[in-house]
Length: 132
Image (cartoon, rainbow, N blue to C red; front, side, top):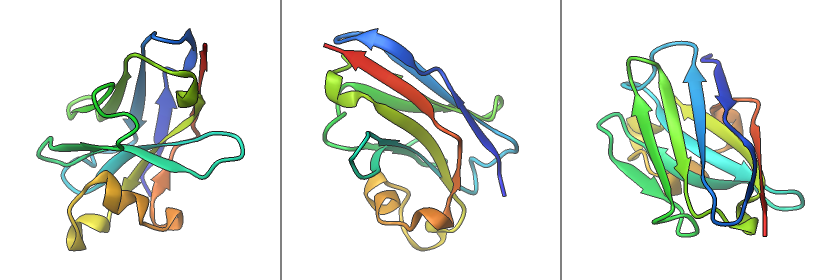
């Protein structure tokens, strides 16, 4: 199973920016659907953004226009650029990779949100705190 390591979390004020990174232990971008999820205390895990191997992206409505997912194939890293951060973005952010999804469905955040978490590889998470 692929190993994923997130980094880049921290504390910022509302309106600020952060860039999260997800480093994979192996080359996965032609085989896996990759996404960022987040979970705030007392809330369900929420899919934030997903990226296909061809670079096409999809986003949750709550972050459209503010967040951007991208990948660096050579570096085996996926990024989440987060701009205009709001207090409600405070959460632990996780990177996830799904090997099976693309055999049956398009790699979108909606489809990743519907997948059982046990079918994905997960990183350990990185904390993002946004103060208003």
